[in-house]
Image (cartoon, rainbow, N blue to C red; front, side, top):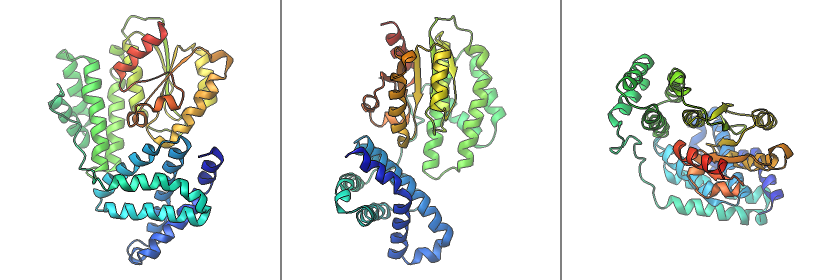
Length: 350
């Protein structure tokens, strides 16, 4: 599909969402009585978000982006007592609204993506599985750590991590087997409606604070003379994962500059020049930001002072499609921090 058509869909998301919301409430008269105006408003907001994934999938010509989002949505809604048949109905309303607002010719293209998602729903995906697994050497510890955080006991969690360091457990093992796994599990528990957004935010903030206390250990490695700049793409608010990756590089002797989440493109380019970066590491959690990554990489490639920099990508969006990094013209993709270091050292030493 051509770019102008994708932009047309993007420009019409609010109008389409209003139309889809009306179709829902007209088809199910009881919704108005049950949820009222607030329910209608939230339905409209959710549908805009839903359409954004369709826009992104079409922009990159990757139906899997839309399919994976649909599978995530059905699991999340199931835990909130909303059946997958309701989601399938929503997808049909999306297609109907696109046909009625943008025309049959346009709808013939979106039908490919929507039909693929509906077909995947027929497989009835099973319940999500805990990320705290038997093969984790710190299984008991990560379960205890997460238990402390979910109970609001940050002090106890901090003491526990300190005790593990005293016992000789390496910081890298704590990062990989406790911090990373607990964050994955927190996300899963929210999706399953077992914890609230407040719980999720508290666990992330507490882990960030605990990590800050470990920096005297992290910054003790011998310097290698190589430089990493790392951040999340603009619009992206998830940052703990890329922050932990940056710390792994620091422990490997790299000079690192972590720029946080929601980094504006122009400021990022200025930082890359100022710090004379060898590697740029970009994190993307939400697939709706993938087009931004492609545009940013293209902009960096065209900058005369940044021609030699190597760009590595990672994050949830790339984990769900292992060849996606090629679509955005990155130099490499890493599934975890250790793989990122290995690939970065290989690229710099070429």
